[in-house]
Image (cartoon, rainbow, N blue to C red; front, side):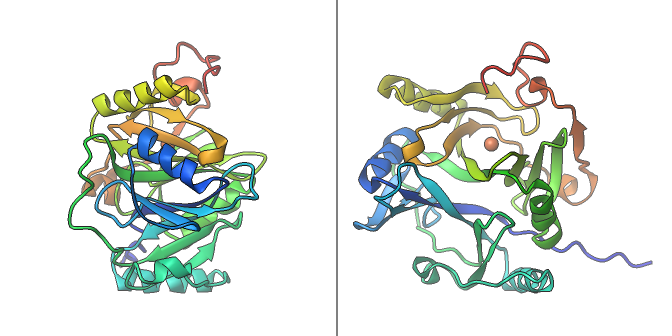
Amino acid sequence: MSTEPRRRAPYGVEYARIEVPDLRATADFLVYHVGLQLEQHNEEYAFLRADIEHHSIELVSAPGREAAETTAVGFSVESTAVLDDLHDRVTAAGLEVLPLADRMKGLCERGFAVRDPNGLVVELFTEFTEYAEPPLLELRPVDLVHPFLATDKYDESLEFYTKVLGFQTSDYVGDVTVFLRGEDRYHHSLALQRNKQFYVAHLCFTMKSFDHVMRARARALYKKVPIASDLVNHSASTSIAFYLFDPVHGPRYELCDGHRVLTVEEHETTHRARRMALDPRNIDVWRAAADDWGRF
Ligand SMILES: [Fe+2]
């Protein structure tokens, strides 16, 4: 009996593209509060990076907007063979294959884009341009780990991300939240939450240490930036994090330490997605009781 080899998922998230009302103000926010380094920019756009990857955030100037809106996420793919296979799956699913955004075309080997069930543009590409060295900054994220999508099309989105793009399920909380992983083996390289409306709820960056999470938290307190959810100890991914939120600067930015990375063996064979009850302690193990939802 032969077993079909698993069709591979994208590797991991590299960037989000965010339209913002005040490009300069958001770039300053991301530099000071998230620790990104501002690279190439002009009046229309700005690239900011965390580590050696070309950028983690692309800001696009949208002066007409009152709040920021995340319009695309970009996932790297390990090889052209996997990219071609993803292209085949997208086509077979009857979905339209779109070109990459113009600014991405010179920043990778090749790729394409597809819209998810909510219309979010998902860009897929190989060989993302990189820098020789990370920014010479001590307090910065070391990686963009996942986008977290709230969606009014939860079931369709779960189908799209697992069946078409090949993400694997890592854990469920009720039938409300699902954590999905790509080939980077983060416990979640993407997460979906059942909601009444669609929005990119947060972007998670991992910092070098818990000490650095606390230093970023101190900066938020010092500048009185709203902390949408203060320190939580995530049961599913084992990370400790807090969330910044100012709607003019993008979705919530989750700054974390200790996000679980599955071993190759767990990723390929042994990990089974848990079905956890919808209880705040299954999201944050530091919650006191089953009705302790107040600080989310
Ligand atoms: Fe998260």
